Image (tube, rainbow, N blue to C red):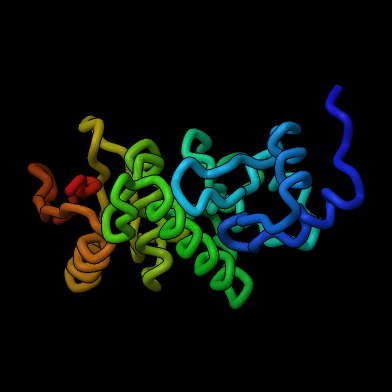
Length: 214
């Protein structure tokens, strides 16, 4: 069993940046955290150290769960069980209010930082590999962060983001035409390619969105 971190190492972990997980400490402390699998050294200059998912789980209880979206380890998905999840539409009585707004803002800022660190050119204006592997969650986060409202339960009003048979695209539905176009504008600004389509049956309009690669 891996030994728990020392008190000094816990202080370094607890003092990590609340959004990116960036660490500050002595070379010996950082190397020890890497050795325990609680941190990793970023391969690109300035070679900062960041918490891994295991490191994030050791954060103090009052730490907002949303910061786990910003885990900077490229191979690790930044969302999962017990961690922040963007509203994809259809949730029953989704949480709202100032606390939720702060979580969404932190999650979006963390995702931009993940883009900066994992896109080869450091670009933040197009999706990164994690987003291409988690299309529904990534598109929903972009929409929620921009202030769009998800559908609640079976209610018609609000957006819904769903997977499609196409491996690189999601469908976004919003019964109000103006709000649907606003969703399209938000996704385009977030680095997605978006097209508006009409369902063969019912003639409802919807969006197909896929992450822009260049």
